[in-house]
Length: 186
Length: 186
DNA sequence: TACCGTTGCCAACAAGCGTTGACCAACAAG
DNA sequence: CTTGTTGGTCAACGCTTGTTGGCAACGGTA
Image 1 (tube, protein in one colour):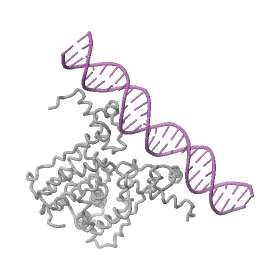
Image 2 (cartoon, chains in turn purple, cyan, brown, yellow; image 1 turned 45 degrees about the horizontal axis):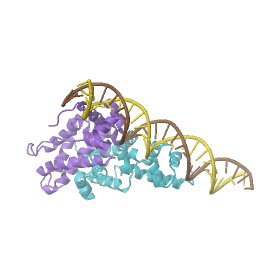
Image 3 (cartoon, chains in turn yellow, blue, cyan, purple; image 1 turned 90 degrees about the horizontal axis):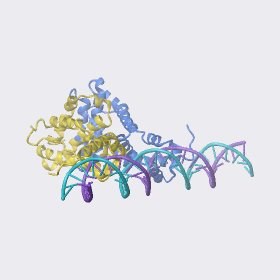
Image 4 (spheres, chains in turn purple, brown, blue, yellow; image 1 turned 90 degrees about the vertical axis):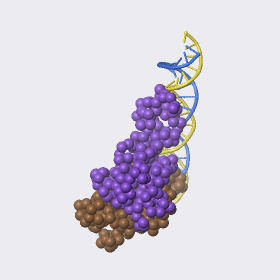
């Protein structure tokens, strides 16, 4: 609907540079000046297009996990599907790592992280776990294992975690996630 | 051996304030000035006693997980023992949360986190897992689940994770850790 | 008492930060 | 051709940061 503007390429360059910097450095060390330098423009442009640093982060951290529909997958393999989907999602761009890094020191980032797991993982948990009232807790358990592997592999870079192949990670984590979602009790 | 100095109480006050600030704010937002204010002294004292900010962090982030001896626990319940020990450890002081928060944006913090898991959790994994050559990977898997729950509960504060009792967390996570350590294959 | 290392505060530095407003060039509409 | 809008740069602001050096008070020791 909104007509394309001449400045769209600049806006996109800023967003891309911002995502990279946030992912690599976290909120405080990702300065507007460094982002502008990466994007090849003046820092004041960032302010004009995104208002302030918080606004820039908000725009650069839209997350869509792109999780499959609840009905579209066999409940017996949902663990493997989810783990492998998350790994792929985490490796295909910098947004997930960025929001995770920012969320540790910035309240807006933490809020976004909470929202993502509640709104996008919650429904899946509700669809497959035995007691729907228990879904938030199941989703949080899954989130803990997924977040932990992301921390180990992409943020802290524990050597053994980095060295595992994607298949190995899926093989080990899938039963865990499967149990968190579908087991009647611990 | 080293004789006690008159300034020991000040040094201790600085360290305590530093641990709290690092835990609450992360590396960049925990300023020397704010730490000094909390400790009730002048910022320049921090420099005199710890050299610079990195030195202060190094001194404030000595971690001893205080894990039990490998032989001292039944291999069949090691999962539950470890999970409950980690939860206790995480809640009794700010050091674990501090180093985790700092490790996300600061290389020295990340290095410390890697060291802790390698040197202190590694031997336990080596003692109980089927193939000792596989120990680092088993330790990293355990670390991923422990770190993930710590992120969810103490850093990002996902409501359902915060709301679980310690016993519930142990009940859900213990089988996971037990499997990561002792299962013959995924 | 005279002395010297220790403990502490104060004032300042240079650098970097987010943010602002004036100004110029290119373009589209009348 | 003029005019108004848009995309962009430049220089500066007020503030905070880590860090430094000077200086005053204290406290054992000779």
